[in-house]
Image (cartoon, rainbow, N blue to C red):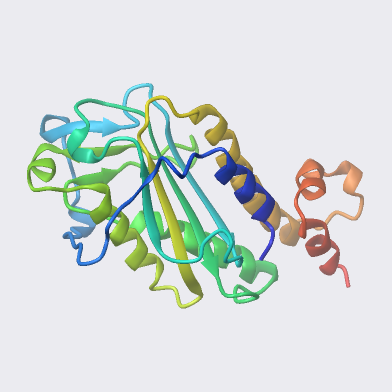
Length: 237
């Protein structure tokens, strides 16, 4: 699984991980309220990515230990208790899977989407994610009560990690939360879109095999990403 590796390397090189805090998620727990996680504006303390602020999520899959050698939750910027108002926000998940565990063809695409869709099944009490895949946004409403009860990114991150590991193919997850107002969210949004373009190209390859690459609108993605062109032509054997 090297399809995302070059882009993971580029993304991580643009994040000063030395300034990020590694959060302690051992013995950290929080209630998951499932589909009942509704937070009205009158009940919220603030919204991560609210108003016109960035609200970015990015997910990529790798099999390389150099990117993800263990489960960890990192935070760049203030934690939930230290935020007073709407602010920019990003959540990045780099997921390490066992080599060749996701299959190929449509199985590969579906396996990657299944990992991505974990975000739809995380509902920490007082932390309501409002995902818009079409707009590429993932803002979060945080309730006043949750802040008073001690909710932080450690609890949210632990819930993500635990849910990812319900998938037997996942070996480790690097989860990065960013709330630093000075961070370059514009560049991150472009990188997140590129991850999504790669995933979309995998689907395109197996649904619309085009022999003439010059006529394909996704040719630039295949040219840039190691393994995509090989994946494409393997469907024609």
